Image (cartoon, rainbow, N blue to C red):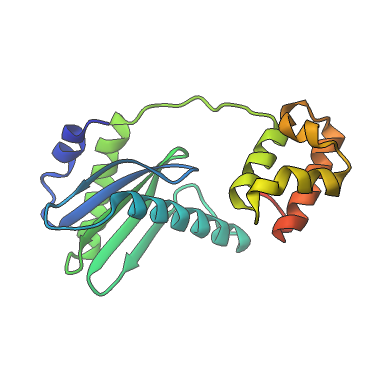
Length: 192
């Protein structure tokens, strides 16, 4: 998204301090607009907002009250923050001045999201084998990720060479890898 598009989308919102568009699920900054006087690291903010949205979604799922139309509102001593999913691929985080009325902030967010969503690219979901996704997930989140393939081979009985090419794993081997991943991470379920 070109900066001029985001700048023109937010120009008429006086209480807005920043907008972060985060690419999900990797929580990477896609685009941002920040008032000149703010000294934030936009990449960090976008990443944390993505993580916060993901944690909120999982928390709501655990309560059985998750919905795809989710919004997170945070009121701190100096900011009003609204996080809203634009699509499964993008999240928008809006930071307002603390004295902005919540109702007005929500109205501005709704209008802003319509403008931004129209400019975002549409992605086709890439269907990658479950074995590949499991190994990549462990390489990202497991302790000692440099040794994860060897740990998986030892725990599953599947050869270490097969872990270098997880797309070739059979369904039974993928099931073993998933069980090992749960034990390694101490989780009862993996949401991949």
